[in-house]
Image (tube, rainbow, N blue to C red; front, side, top):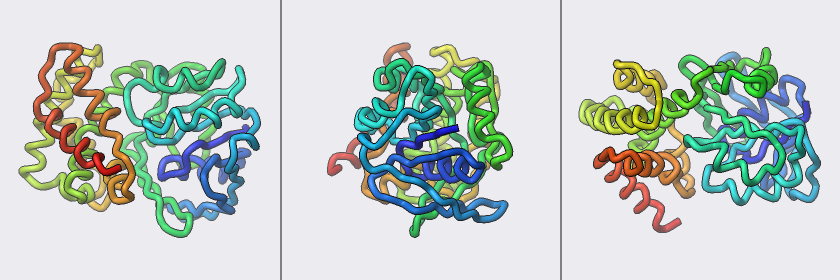
Length: 293
């Protein structure tokens, strides 16, 4: 398959290197030219040659686009999407948030948007290296439909696991539960996930989760009675040395995805009449961090 990866950060870098190593025809749409990527993975490192494009004018239609930019960068990816997408193109959205189709759909014309949940933990290192830590149950999750099945086939025998699920709305909210807990705390403290193991921080996580669960259920997510405990267990399943996307963004001086994560939760709380005071405080602090961006 021909695949264009737009956004070559930690998530996009891992997707590009993994798919290229599997033999797909992969091109990275990025701001600087790369000859290769070194994918660091538990089963061994692999050095993958990689084609890159710097100008949307050089791009042609492909079978798949992997949109791996930050959520707020979606409009800036429009020139790439306009060149890469035709009616037969599928656009896998490897972004955070719960409204991927609504957010990306206006930019892809007749192409099909394939919402995707990312559970692997990626870290972009020096020397064009990307490191993956695998997800707890699966690395990627898509809807159980023909587009999701086609996505899963791309990763056959790649080492990345793809799960297809029927209740994608519930899973999208479950992913948001993870994002609104670990991301803000690591970004605000500038500490990796070891900080989440403090007793006082775990109590704070419980408060964040309780508010988020109330909103998620009001939005129609079919969550378990012990969902709070499951969410906390999932958060703590990542190794202490792992970072989060928001943590790495703050270290790099990039804008945070506060409005599409915690902001989306607070906004939904307003819509359903559910108070979210703890998450409102976190959102205020995250926006304050972004004031100088």
